Amino acid sequence: MGRRQMRENGAFDERFAGLNACLGYHSATLGQLMTVWGIMKTSLALCAALLLAFAGTPVLAAPLLHCEVTYAGSSHVIEVAPGSDPYLTKSIDIDGRFRFKAVVLGAGERIDAIKLYAYYETRRQPILIQEMKLLPPFAVSDQPDSLTGRQYLYAPPLGRELQYGCALLEAKP
Image: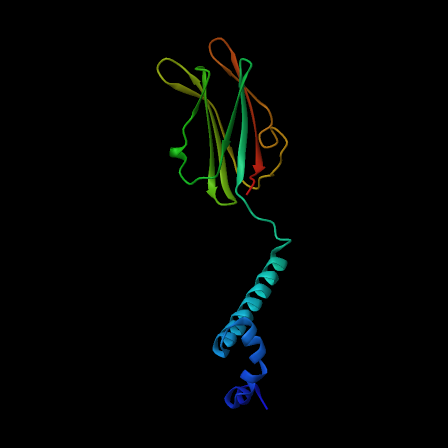
């Protein structure tokens, strides 16, 4: 006799009468509990399968441009994430003598270009003294200056020295 026939004949309910009495539920509630338990087992099995499938998959995060700029013994750390509009990025004041601007063009983990600008600050306006454009492929490394090398820039008329170096770091998700 199948389960359906057992239910129709009342045998199913009699078979689990002791369990029903112990739990204090009638047979319809027990059937519902069994259905919910079946759904939960299926959901747990699916979650476990997904966890196993993606356990070795690394989480991709957008790289981060990390630049260290030094002037007259003081250092400034500038970190820039990829963006789509270079005009929204502001230049950073370096002790009133220089300005530094780093632009990373791209989206997500994809970088299309990196542009670096160094300006000498005058009374009238900043003067561009270096522009660097870097195109892919880029090496991600935690070594300082690994992307640009160490750059030494000198501004007129007194020959003030600005140093900087940038590396492309893997961002922590």
